[in-house]
Length: 99
Image (cartoon, rainbow, N blue to C red; front, side, top):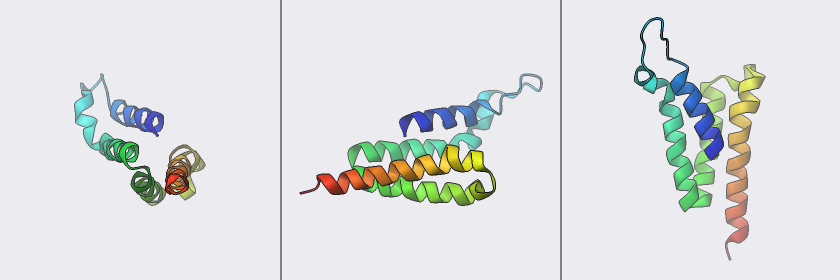
């Protein structure tokens, strides 16, 4: 999840840079805001895996809706499914380790 967050967050932040029009990277922070939120949830997942896993699953479902992932396979397999799988593994791992 850390690698996914860094990759897509960096891509979202740097994709708005336009040296021809003089647009600096900080004017594209609104595009990177969802990835900052994901970074916060990943931090929560490090502290509390089950809660973080549930939140990551919710963000994965939200990404399917927000990015219209069911119409674009690249978005579905590059953003939504890794989030859903990682969140599911965190929840399952948290459930299996609880005694």
